[in-house]
Amino acid sequence: MIEMTLEMAEKVAKAALAKAKAQGTPMTVSVVDEAGRLVVTLRGDGTSFFSPETSRAKAVAAANFGRPTKEMAELHAKAPLFWATVGNVIPGQILTSMGGVPVRKGGRIIGGVGCGGGTAEQDHECAAAGADAISG
Image (cartoon, rainbow, N blue to C red; front, side, top):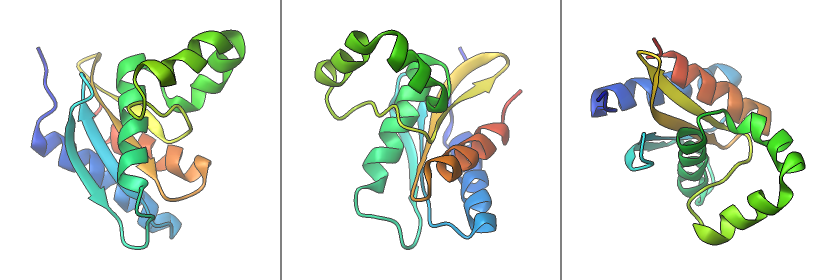
């Protein structure tokens, strides 16, 4: 089993923050393992007090559903009852708004990265940059 190590998570988080810096956007980045357990959170200067929680919840959603949270809007439209229920089953643990991307290594999902602090599109771009830093 491939596991998300601290070294890998730091590489993901730093790549996401580098993308945010290039955009001129404050950003918080959280990286979780494949089970949604937090490995690292880096809270960027100027981000909101709740960005660590939202970035983690986006990372958890991406890791557990195996797709970027950007794609989940279509899933909401196809199965609104399911998605309405998810939040009640595990309140506060999953956030399906843009900014979460699964992290893959060796073709397997080993975790997720979530970003918060910019626009939805900026959050997604930073998370994707983080995931790309170790994908393979």
